[in-house]
Every structure is written in structure tokens, then in C-alpha cells.
Length: 400
Image 1 (spheres, rainbow, N blue to C red):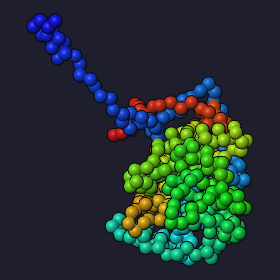
Image 2 (cartoon, helix red, strand yellow):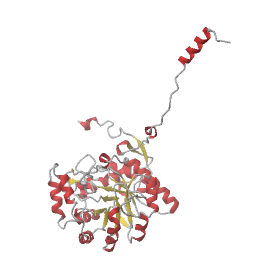
Image 3 (cartoon, rainbow, N blue to C red):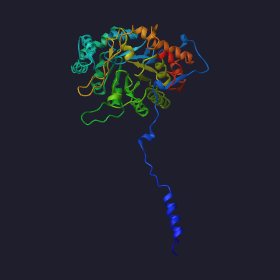
Image 4 (tube, helix red, strand yellow):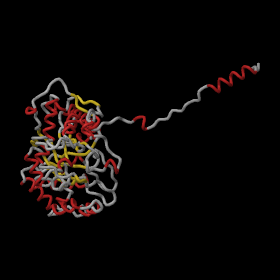
């Protein structure tokens, strides 16, 4: 039986009014994870406080006694033998860049002076030229002796490509600690043109502790620990002189990165009983950021540009990335940080400014006391809240 004209009209109307089928597409943006930097979070007071003088900041790190949880970054504008001695006298530890100007030139200070005085237009070419000179084994041995002579343990750093040769040499000549440091560290590096460094083998035959950096990934950190890392450094691109995030588009905000890797540390400790310290490397300029880094899970803090402002720093008020600049792709920018005072004033005060950039350790101690944390481990357990407005809330009079 044929449909009547009325029924055909009704069917056509219903079809026209039915919603069109909507296709659903998946996007990478659908799975974006929220991550946090220092300006996104705040530390929440708890139910107790402690006297600042009773806050314990000392710890055993890599088998060495640290009076304060501060490392100086392996940057040429920050660390030389004299600076190493100055920081050691305050309880911290400096790390020397084995592939920097200190190991390429007998008179490294003259090279640093030229870089500091260069104009912005010529500095990149000057940096590339300075780092083209060969690394000298005799200078490596001499710098280790000079650091010891200044009253500090000798902590040294090299990239994975140089570590296989320089590691045993440094250990033989008295280095106390060796850091294998690269832009991004992983437990498995693929390369067809050369034999990549096996961290597991390297840590096994090295007679001194070997730390590894840098990473932001929990699984990578766990694997590095499994391969024998004595410490894991966290941070890809947060430093003031680092251009990794701009040039390569790589990085994770430090609060999230440190928290993720600290989770791997705790899981590894629960499985093995071996505690591998986490070093927050970069992105900290003020005392509050040091406190947040510890609260995120760091055991030790590595500072670069804040320490480059010290009168004892060899960079004369400038700083640049620890990676030697490439002739074709800049891997660090020289920045002018100025000289604000002695290393002691920057770390231990008294502060002469109100922006939190001086008396960094004193601010950390006061923050821990106010939060009721009498040790680094207790500080790692304080409450952290998402509070992106906490720095500016009610501060209009300070922004005039």
C-alpha cells in the first residue's frame, strides 16, 4: 500500500528536523596535563611552628657533609676554584664545568673578562670562539688541585659524550663527585654514529659517586636510579640564562617536574631501601622559590644566576648557559645579572633589598619554621596549594 501525501510530508519533515550525526575527533589537546611553576603555587601554614634556630638544614649528600642545601651550577660565570672555596666555607658545594673555559685556558680569568665586556652584538661569536679551544687534561688536574686547595671537595661535571674519558681521569686525580649532565638525560640514548655512554656500566666502574641530570620525567628518573645514579638533577630550561624552552620548545615547569621525580625517588626507596637525593636545578631566584622547591620534594637546590651576582663569582655580573654555544644554534644566552654583594650576603644575609633575592637560606629557614618543618624531610611534607594570585594579591602599593 502506498503512503498518502500527508504521511510522506510528515516523514520528510521529521528527517529534516533530525540532528545531523556529529563526528567526534580526538585531539592531543584533549589530554593536556596541567603543570605548575613556582608562581602557580603557595605553601599553606599548618598547625604548628618551630623556632628558626632549630631548623636543621644540614645533610649528607653524595657522602659529603652539606651545611646548607645549596649547590652552585656548573657554569663558567659562577664556578672557579676561588668561588668553590667561598661556597664551601658557608656550607654549600660548587660544581665545576669540565668542558668550560677553566679547562681550556691557563688564564681563564682573562677569557671571562672579555666575555663579560663584549657587546651584545659580538658576544655569541666570542662565546663560540672561546669554547672551540681544546680541553686540556693538565688543566683538569690542576683545577681539581686548586679546588681542594681552596678548602672544598672537588665536584665536577661533564656531558655524556665526554664522561667516559673524563670520569676515570678525574677520579684518578682526586675528584670527589662526578656529575653526568646533559640538556635532557634518559636511561636509554639512541645513536648510530657512536657508542653511547652506558650509565649502568659507568657507575659500576667509577670509584666515586656519579650523579645524573637533567630530567623532568618520573619514569626516566626511576630508571636512572636503577642504573646507579647517586643523585638525579631535575630541570629542563628553567634557568635565567637557559634558552632550551625558547629554542627547542622543551621543558616542564619546575614544581611539577620536581614533584614527579620526587615521586619516583620515594617509589625507588620503597622498593630498594636506597635513597637517591633529588636536586632542583634552576628557576629559583628568591627565598620563597627555594622553599617551594623543597616543599615540592627536592633535597638539594642548584643555583646559577642568583650566585652569579656574588662578588666572588668569576663572571663579573654576567652569566650564560652551562652548555657551550653551538656555532649554528645558540644554546645559552649571556645575561647581565649585576653584582649585588658578597656570596655570604646573598645566601646568609643580612639582606639589603626587599625582593627576596638576598639571604636566600635565611628565607628558607624562616619559611620552614613558619610551616612547622624542622628538617628538609618535614618540609617536603607541608601542604602546597594552587594559588596563582598569591604573589600579587593585595600588593598594588608595591607595583607603583
